[in-house]
Image 1 (cartoon, one colour):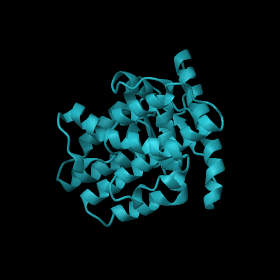
Image 2: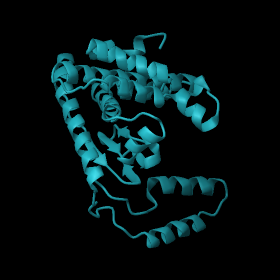
Image 3: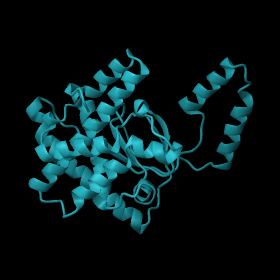
Length: 269
């Protein structure tokens, strides 16, 4: 699926803001007027066909190839555990998008929504991965896609639901720990895919794994917190450190088996 810039509207997020403003005794009407004015200034409908350039077409095709190969991998692996693999839908968007999990902007980065089983990606993230995070290369991009597909696998096998239920019953520190374990398992699943892509289909080139490891390190919580706030707070991590992300990716890559990715049975991550 390819969607253009969505038309502005109140939506669920805007409605929630209205309620909060009202609870704090703030008149929400000026906010509503601002939304209406913005909508008039940007009347472009959400179903306007998107015109992609040559570079975007190349990135889109690469993304589709990687996504299709992850389907081959998980269609082979999941039946052994009693599950049928249902491929996610890829949604490429520009600037912002509305999913069943809520609205998101390109600055949020790629994400997976378990409610609609879709992977959302703004192709400009690939440039950010290179220029902002210092992780260039097509396999760095492939790692990101495979990681989001890893979240889809977690959703299919019920892990995502179990973790959400646990997070609702525990404090913030434990909820963050569960989030880190989810993310590291998705990294490990990305490594499992890389193993199969290399050994079964010979798709990897020399240096590809190094590109994936560089990306895993670059988007670790410690690196991002250091860049954005100048200091690191490990207890607030929700994705894991760069070293953890590299290690769990390699754990999946070296074993090539999803049963080697049980981050929830490991005391020390």
